[in-house]
Image (cartoon, rainbow, N blue to C red; front, side, top):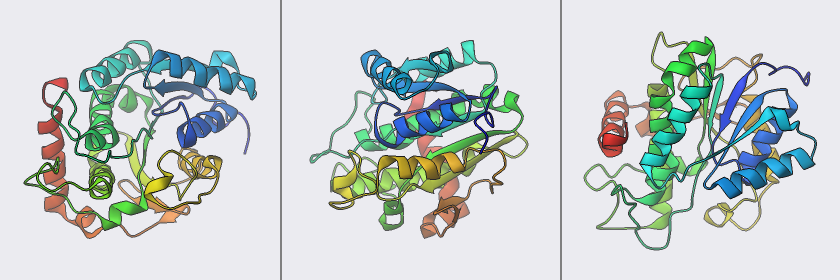
Length: 273
């Protein structure tokens, strides 16, 4: 693939300070894209950019951005910064994710923390960045999900799982919600295509949820970046695994449930939207 295949294109990668996110930023910069490198803090974003430059990325291709996704107000500020400086955005890679903690933990916004960081932040970003994405003409949203979404169920009556909490169930639900909401991020006629994918079991901070061994994070990033390349045709709303469309959880195929998760997300992001 040509190193300039993504030249003149702007990409926002969330959770790009380490793991699959950092490797995704590295590969996209290698393809010529201007990469907006998001991390939780300014120091983490600056460190990520410094490491990218150390491995050969051009400094003028990289822009550090910081926002703590456990605070929806910071997600909104991040989106506002992108809209102000980048009226056209070609790619949004929703990669940021956290492991659900041992005990149910609510953010200041009142949401279970993994549900907010892994799903609600992506939902809010896609909504607030719709104008620059639409302006690009053929923009893509790539949601980094997980095979664990197939084991999940949406707890509609208690989405924060306060009454009966399990860290694995909470994390899996966040990935199911992200997968289910993908098509809603790219309305018909918007000029945006949105997909989700399983990047595979990789050696990242989330590995303990999956097992003891995993592939290098660069392998997962390669699966993500493949879906970002313009010569790869995508089906809007589809879930990919190993480069091909894969079976999703049954809930992700139920029209009523898809509408329900979109409505729930809008309610939970509340005033931040």
